[in-house]
Length: 91
Image 1 (cartoon, rainbow, N blue to C red):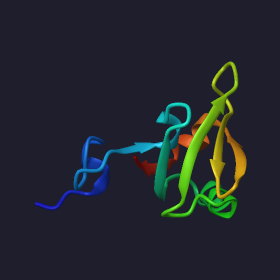
Image 2 (tube, one colour):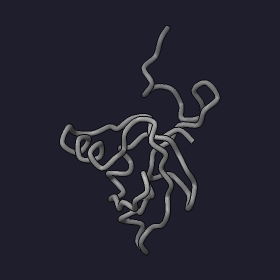
Image 3 (cartoon, helix red, strand yellow):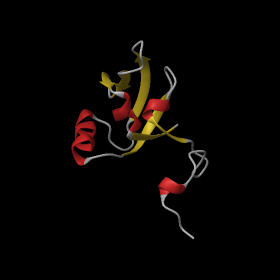
Image 4 (cartoon, rainbow, N blue to C red):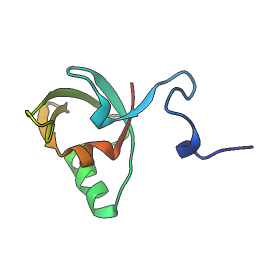
């Protein structure tokens, strides 16, 4: 039986670790595999450069871990934790 990607555990798909952007550790990198959420928030993230295949590096968090700062396509971008949670990545 074929299961949708949401039902597959985050451990591995074809040997790759799947996660969300908010789960990265400092200076850890991931590759964007998709964006969840409402159309307006997805569009905003796509326009900021979070397109499938983009490499993203977690740079730092503020003292209360919101917002989170990422390096993407040569620039730094701050996202709220709930926005970062909607970006799916592959480690």
